[in-house]
Every structure is written in structure tokens, then in C-alpha cells.
Length: 203
Image 1: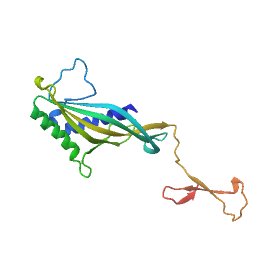
Image 2: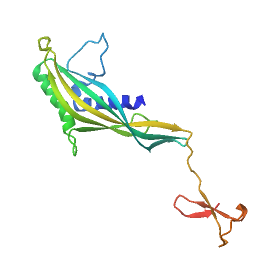
Image 3: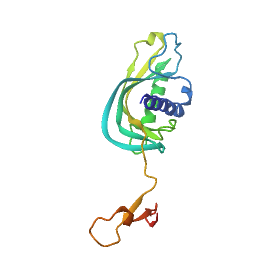
């Protein structure tokens, strides 16, 4: 589902902006438009390739009594975070702030977790972003353009909505109180209602 990937990438951008306020409005996704004017500092989040890994389906969220959101595996993305600035040292400082965001996660440094709550129809879920590598690009130094490339692996749940799902709202049990092994007609079986707390009451 494309909305899952899009919202996950947006949340990654928001996490970076929250940690580095000077990047507000300076983060773009994918390749910029041909008429886009580059301004510094800037960050581009570019997913290069998506791979799907199936898994046993499990229930994720119930948006309505007749629909259920299932987690059927995960999407893994090779993502390039491209950081640009006007001077060498400004690039160093900005890159370090982005790296600190990944490395400063308590308990699992190098893995950034983002909670996605913007998809009301899919419920709340988590995306993980694993830091892989970083390198510098100084080929355009004479143009006062210094870049850093950070490689990240994004791990996003694969969610699908299944509709016309029927849920059990009332559970009844037929009790044979005769003590005999013979099959009784349905009219001779006592029907009881099973309550949410496990007790029974007359149907």
C-alpha cells in the first residue's frame, strides 16, 4: 500500500526537522523538480529500491466491524539521505546532527524508530530506519556545494485492509443436560449465552 510508504517517509522527514529546526521547509523527497532552485542547507530523502518480504498474516487494526487491517510482512527500502550545505564545516556540522539523531536512540543506537499515527484507516504502527553508511561528496566545492550521503535501510510494515470480515458479537452454547450420549434434537438442547467475562446466562 503506497500510503504506508509515503507516510513513513514523511514521518522520517518530520523526525529530522524536529531534531534540527533549521531544516524546516528544506527537506524534499526523491528527485527535485527540474525548475527547483537549490537552497542551503537542504536535505533530500531518496528511496532507491523497495523490496517486499512476506510473513504470516496477523491482525494489526480493526477500523470497522466489517474490516480488518492485516500485517502481511514488511517493505525494506534502500534510502539515500543527501545533505547539502555551502561550506565544508557547515556540512560537517549538519551531517553530525543527522547522525546524532540515529546514534542517540536509547537501547539501540543506529536505529531510529518513528511512530506513524497519520493513517486513521490503518491504525498506529512503527517504522524503523537503520543507519548503514555515510560518505562525503566534495566534487562541487568550487560551486560552494558540499554534500554528504547517508545510507539508511527503512523497514516498514506491509499493511493490507480486508473487507467484508465478520466478527463474533454473540456467542451461544448448546448444553445437553440429559447425561446421555445420544444426539438430541435441537429443541431438546438448552441454549445459553456466553458473556464477555466467561460466565453463562439463559439465551
